[in-house]
Amino acid sequence: MEHFCALQDRPDSYRTATRWRMVGTHTGPGIYGEPTGNQISIMGISHHLIENNRFIQEWTVFDEFA
Image (cartoon, rainbow, N blue to C red; front, side):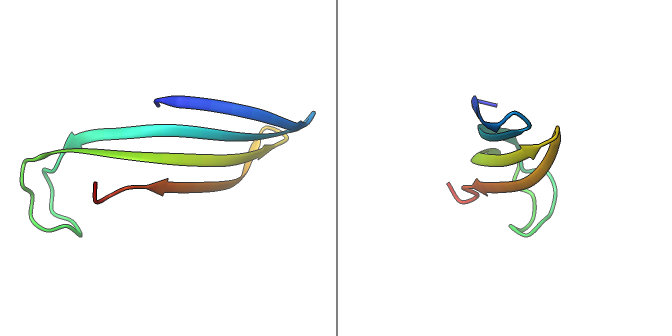
């Protein structure tokens, strides 16, 4: 997690935004072909709507080609 913020809508409702980064090594086959052993870094942003301490909705966008 690189950055997080939360805004309270009502006493029991929050909207959150999280900027995150996943770092790893391409070691297994998948939709991008055979493993290359290359390092990967994927940056993304997730937004959540939380009501009564439950996740109600989630929106996530990430840049898989960068």
